[in-house]
Length: 120
Image (cartoon, rainbow, N blue to C red):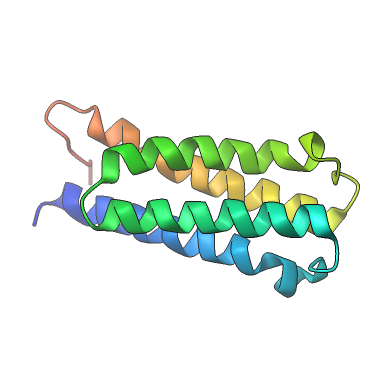
């Protein structure tokens, strides 16, 4: 296994974990009773986790694009869906969305190296 494969597995696994954390955030942070932010976290987190699983089973490139879009959506969701004033819900979406988008961006950047590589 190459160093690139190690990084790809680490990034894919981190996206799976971040998706699960976003999915669990309504209970962990305490906004499960608020319908809009809770559903946004459950749906977005579930989709991020599913894309992370897809990446782990060999679909890293398309999964990275999906997670880039989902991470950006998670960042914007508090204002688009109208729960930007709810601090816990807003920050959980923004922070986890940013981490997912950064991980997906790193994966895409590594995929476009010729040949794919990771520097030590």
